[in-house]
Image 1: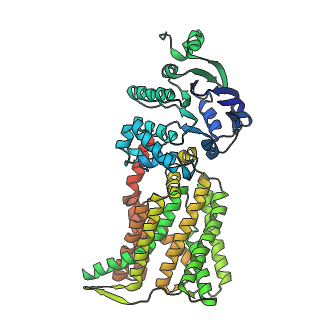
Image 2: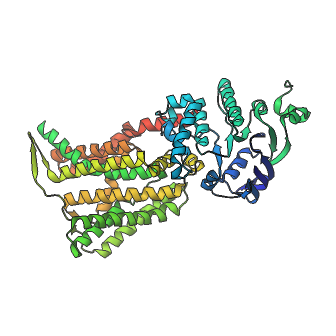
Image 3: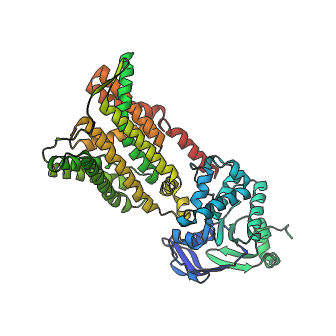
Length: 239
Length: 299
């Protein structure tokens, strides 16, 4: 559904993505793994229209969306749950969620209200805290808020940048449960993770990134069969 | 004691004008994280347009008000395009310096267009003195105070009940995240300038019609009072701006009563220094700054 074809993205003179290609298929969880500086976040930013690619092509379905500005990308149906969550700390939980639907047209209002209710049903804790400032939530709750906020855009594909970062293991489990539940309900997900073990449990397809390029691509089983990769990413003990 | 209370009443009344100016500064600072020094001078130019209409065309108060507000908004947009839209977002010092340059430019324009410098400004309010028990209040101050309250209510509705208001607060709260939500921050900035300039134009009109004259120094005066009131309340905080404005009004009124005009002006700066040393974040600001930091540290 979402296809990235041979993109090159630069920060000034530094080439962060050196001809990277990948595909996120409809209804699947696609995961980008790799060390710091491999270009995972840069890939998401380039897709989201926050960074411009120097060359290459990004398509969503049949539409070429290469280097569209961020608001247009959101309207096309790609939402981002950013690294570190980046909620609005001084806006209420409800306002955070409403802001997530900002790219939708005004006439969508009844559907937006219904979606808000849906988010509250999915995350009862957000409902309990709906009037609280976003900044007063715990890390896990903020992550739920960031996910809920992205869902408010009714995305065709949800991009998540390290949703487990800085969270306690029990909360990480909870977040990954949410991810697989969302996926079962039909949401396509493009996931960036450093927590390879958790990622392997939910992902249908995995891309390993290194130095701005894809060095491996396959399903979790293929990845586990590759001994060199297993040593580098999963540690010896995992079978 | 009666004197002191009387001064406090006067101070609150006049401080409401300061509060409006501070509100303009703090709203822009909240959205841009940059200071617009030429806010005061753009109001001054608006006021000159108002007085020009008054002298040449019509004594109608509504027309004068419209001329003042529309010109202030036009000048505000000019400032936004030159100092903030054209200058990179992260170049905060460059924006501040260029807004200072525009300030000088605006004063020159005012002096050339209206070389006599001091012009009458129409008094919208009929001046009578109203007795309330042992105290008395000037009617134009009551009108100014009430209009300020109305304006605050409107602004509150705009910020908290409308879509553009929500977008504006989102950009102020977390510019990066608001970009991810598909909020176009440069059009929001433009909107913020238009709204703030309209508030500024109204504030200028209210203050000047209580004063019944306008001089080119009004720009300097408005920028100083607005900045001081904003710093007193806490940068970027709307309730802080209102509190800061009222506090400044009360302190100045008392200083004037007990010490005269020179002491009044000194007292404003003294108050600012004391506040910056004792509570660097301002009356309301520190709490918010601390909370925001806590939020960012947690993420």
